[in-house]
Amino acid sequence: MNNKNLLTTILRHITISLAVLTITACSTKDAVTDAKNQEVSKPENASAKVSVLVEGSDFHGIHGLTTDSDGMIYVGSVVGMNIHKVDPNTSDVSLYQAAPEGQADDLEFSDDGILAWTAFTEGKVMSRDPRGNLKVLAEGLPGINSIAYNLEGRLFATQVFLGDALYEIDRDGAKPPRKIIEGMGGLNGFDFGPDGKLYGPLWFKGQVVQVDIDSGELKVIAEGFTVPAAANFDSKGILHVIDNETGEIVQVDIASGEKKLVATAPSNLDNLAFDAKDNLYVTNMSDNAIYQVDRVSGDIRTIVGGALTTPAGIDILGDTLYIADTFSLSKADTKTGKVSDISRIISDHEYPVAVSATDKVIVNASTNAGFVQGHDRTTFERQFRWTGFLAPSGILAREDGSVIVAETGSGRILLVKNQDDRQVLAENLAEPIGLTEDAANNIYFSEAGSGMIKVIDHESGKITTWAQGLNGPEGIEFDSNGLLIVAEVGAQQLVSLDANKNKTVIATDLPIGLKGYPMLPGSFLPTGVSVDAENRIYLSSDIDNSILLIER
Image (cartoon, rainbow, N blue to C red; front, side):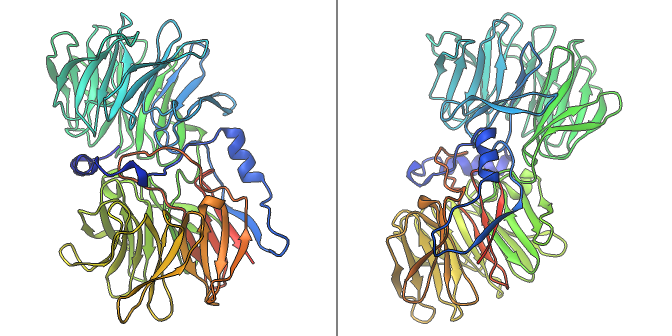
């Protein structure tokens, strides 16, 4: 989830056509493992070696979690649109509810074994009984986010980011939701206390509040959090709260508001839950991780996790591969594959899907928040943020400080020099995504919707179709021999095009191009391609969250 600026931007862009959205569903663990271990097939005339630089991971961003009577963990994903079951003892992951019905931001079991969850972008509350029967309990609630049963078995859910309200949900789905209160400030992951009152964090206000579910009366019980994300009670009635930005897990005395630090985990926490034995589990979006927290020692044990969450755009400079990892802005050492963070704080990067680097700056773009921003390449301090873009999904940073932007939401290519200086280079395009330049500074871009590669002449600004007949071209880049490398996502292959437009398949059956639904309205997840000085090709995988190294 995101900060207050994102809320305003999302609401402004919610009308962007879903036709440009292709963020995809997560596979099961078996499918992920198969994709990571498979030998990528190639045509007879292709001699490319495909290896894994950065190993993949389960899920595509992990959010709400709950446990069953046997102590198994169930976790949801908005981007992945699957609900998974996780064994906390063995770390085994299995699919519980497949996409698209499995999109879940938060989820919880009732006493009689019915799992209810919130489908954030679908605006639905869903349930599944122990026999596997699905039911829509409510719909028409964009941004439906957190969910919980009270002590009487009544069901409640909140809208956050695309709305701001608390509802009671009919468990049979026969009656419309009852709105209890609105305009709270982002009531996120909540729980019910021994007194029957609802307790939860206000994401945008840094507070934890108590709500009377019958009268709608709201009372602040604790303050001073940075971005409180979720709150849950243990079996003794002690409230625990996680802070998304600081990674802190604290106990809160609901009578006095006094806070006690229990442990500190990596930042970008999203939710927490206790099992029947009071084991505490926490999810982390940046690490695709479930942690078990020892409340005595403060130790954090990773049950499952990964180096990357949902890698999209990539760019290489020297031995460093910069990665727009959706829930983090990251970098990988191309010699070792080791991944480290540039920024994992949502309020800073806000779901990056494109990245481009120069000697001075790392530029990233967020389709959801509609901005392009730059970080100093040495200190990682943010240098600028340009706002007001419509789903920017491709960027090309230049040494003169300007940035070429593929604005997928509007179908335009822009030359941007600062917040107020923007020139339209091309418009009326069908999902422009990939961007690159040739030696003469002519700008090439891919149109995923039309299957074309087009070029903008550096001198005249004239736009011509350079190649066509491609199947969903996204990431593009020239190698040192003048070949244009293209991620042909619709065909799950990587190809090269020479100056005569002759197409050569480099590798096929690649783990790219899963079909699914968007994380947030106005978003697009591009497949990234980058080529180093030795003409080795790097490719981001949206199926298994890996980075592939392809050598010809």
